Length: 118
Image (tube, rainbow, N blue to C red; front, side, top):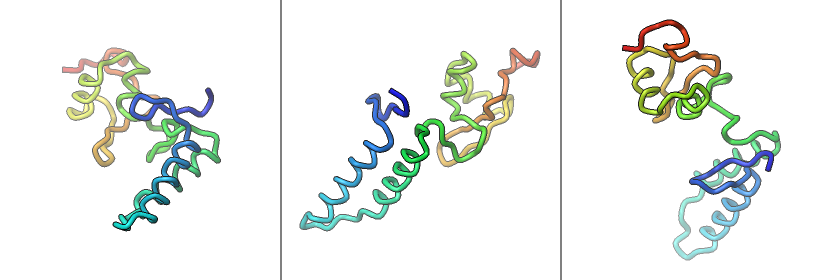
């Protein structure tokens, strides 16, 4: 299934996510409590932009050419904790955006650069 992104362990594409969010926005607007929906509307818009681009959510990043640390660790065969330790200590190039670490897609782990990690 092209363009499918796992969200909390369930495969879902961006268009389906946007449809779910739109339904939740409608539900909240029709409820007697009139809960805030502006944050959901922003997420729905982003999901529709991603769906229209043909990319998955995992292919989009706040830093062009960078990967989330967990995805980078999968690519290079490192454990998440090890990757996070390298990022915190500056062993690998990494940036923290919000609560997430991002690593350049072409960054090599220390053992492949001939550099000691500790």
